[in-house]
Image (cartoon, rainbow, N blue to C red; front, side, top):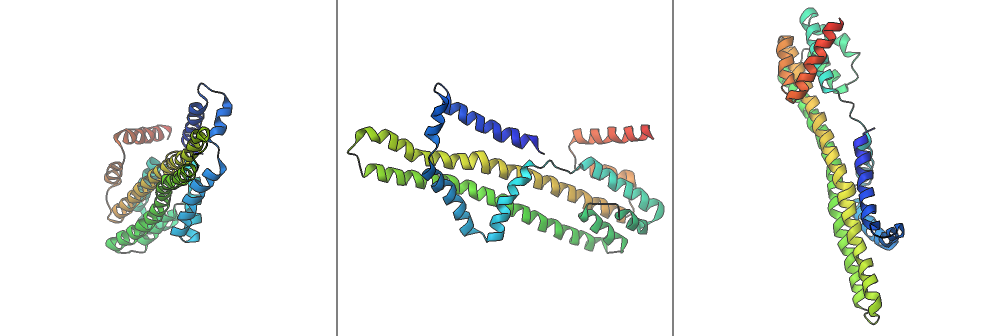
Length: 266
């Protein structure tokens, strides 16, 4: 569970409620609750998205919100160490010995690359196959990110539509001046809902998905470089230094400390 996503979204909600009730009673929150406005803004935004996407893609986009609450299972230093271990095996026992090691690997992308190397596939062809799959994965991720970015654009637009509807209805009947203020407030609620949808939900979801995509792409690029280096027969220490170049300097230090700790334990 990604606790940062939960804390961030709940804190935003708490701050909005605090702004509504500050200097007033908690009942002031009800002033911001209006079912027709919510229906126009949220319903309009998502139904517009349904019209823009196929039903499977629309449902897939909605379901992708669950990903922001999942803690990343990618241990980049651990993956680098796994590739180093594979390079040591290949150096001592030959590339064919990697087939047995592949059976214990859960990462399908890495396993596929290992089997291509074991089969004696040309290095350029291995890179082409792996990068094609990498591009395909990234394209699927971009579809989910684009879905939430588009919802974020639709929210304020439909909020403005709701506000315009409210203003038209209000201006058609100005006989009761006492009702102008409440009617104006009601008209503006849809704009508020649109802004909430865009900035409280869609922007964090899209940004979090972008971060997860970038992390996964980096891991897969590390795996591609590692496998090609193993296939080329490079020294494990050289492979290690090459793969560590993908990491931030602070992460490289942690990786080195982990390795030293493992050697000491041994």
